[in-house]
Image (cartoon, rainbow, N blue to C red):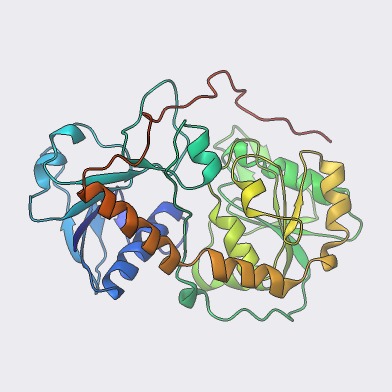
Length: 330
């Protein structure tokens, strides 16, 4: 099959960039399965397994896609997609805004994500675990960690810090933020139990996860998926988060604890040793690999080629009067 993957930005990505990492692994695994893969992106730093087409900003996107492809897989909602003569699907990686209807061939990244858009089609994100190495599950674990873009208030880094302060003798490493933040106005976090590492990636991030007692993930929105969840579980770290979005379907009682109460989360974190690192690792490695994700997308590509709609209804956001920040209590 000749497949075109379309995404904004630059590939590959080496630090922050969850969507880009998923798209890269999808293309890599499609090629491993014997398919002819091309990327249409803003810029590329090189690729050994696929053809790179750099987008021309002076020409409409749809006009840059030839009829040679069997299927086109967009990673965002493109304009004028109805003019495309090639079968296509669209992955909606984030939460949609407003009352805008989405394309009927839209795929979501969790069951909850699809349900909140009155849709059925979803594929869980997957990662190429060979890039993550073999975690040392017996490592000494010295701190908890937060992983995400801390400048996004819905990620609730403040809630993660408030939770750790309730625990005697515990510390938290913030991966994805800095102590001094001008993006949210002047904000300086003085708490000595907190250490910031900025937008880490690669070996530095993996080393951090190897020694963590658990991921503190008190998001205040409906998380579409959450790569931080499966990355942390892969390294044997249980998840302590809020019961919003995809979390209840990804994190069961053997893998962590969910509550929108900082006090209840902190009490659960006191018992982090109750969660078996190997159970966490095996779950992530088994259920969220790039191979499983790619096979699921191949089934949807076949439906698109047969001109079968992926959803019975036109997807659109159904929770229209939802608060910007979901409930979080002390």
